[in-house]
Amino acid sequence: MFVVNNMGPEKSLRSPTGEMLQCALWGLMLVVSVVVYGSHAPLITLCRVDGQIPFSSSSVVLLIELSKLIMSVVMLLIWDRKSVQLPVSWRLAVPYALPAILYGTNNNLVVHMQHYMDPSSFQVLSNLKIVSTAVMYSVFLHKNLSTRKWLALSLLAVAGVFYSYGGIQDLEEQSTDAHLYISLQGLLLMVIYCLISGLSAVYTEVTLKTQKIPLNLQNVFLYSFGIIVNFLVHLTGSHSSGFLDGFSIWVLVIIVSQALNGLIMSAVMKYSSNLTRLFIISFSMLVNGLLSYLLFQLQLTLLFFLAVLLIGLAVYFFYGIK
Image (tube, rainbow, N blue to C red):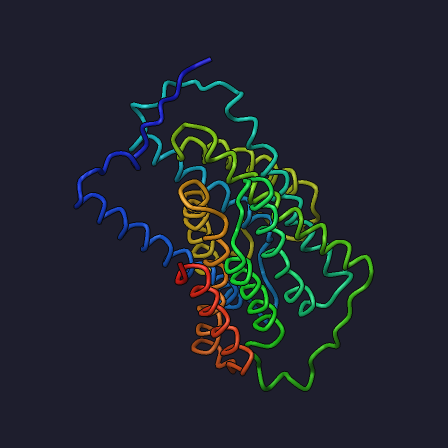
């Protein structure tokens, strides 16, 4: 058993100037996270070759986890080296195995659900994870949310449905849209997916806040298990190409940006909450829509602007009313 002191970088800035710098850094992190979330789908589109994704998705996910681990180790050595006396007790690391397994399970569920519903139905119904996350946050963290805050979170879910259903459209492909369909198995898998999504997010937040050790060390534990789980997933999958086949500069951008966003999300869950995370994801829809319009000439529909309105109302009800 070894001692780990809670002397992370968050405690090093105490002066008014330091607090202002912290606020500015926090705001910058949130903006970066919104942009990264919103740019993910457009970046995937830029990677396509003849309409197909040329790389192994499990390879990319594994490299993202590896990148997050490397970034965490570097920041741990820079900022928390004096506060950590290695090696650390295994009891501190074990709790991070569960979220790694849950995240890995959901990544596989996303692929499996495509057999039981069309992509549009998946996009629409997946917004239910906003509700499941909010409910689990309230139950497991014993947070009594006001009626206004529940209304705000409900507006976020409805905004996500509007945006997913038809916030952006390719006018040239409207006539060839596939019909909507979903089976009973698909509905059951979607319920499981949303429950796991909420559970994994809230469990991670509880673990990060409960342990009084530096966030960078917690990230090392979390992403180490993430690498193990995703490596096993990659080994069990069928691959018709090599590990790095189909990689391009855009794939590298995806790996680095998603790794950075993973670190930001850990900070959000430790020092804020999953509710902040939900707002980040909702705001990212606006970035996604604007990038789709600018890069691919997709049309922003009335549903997109209704989603913008609902997100604005959600912010007002959640943060603006005392």
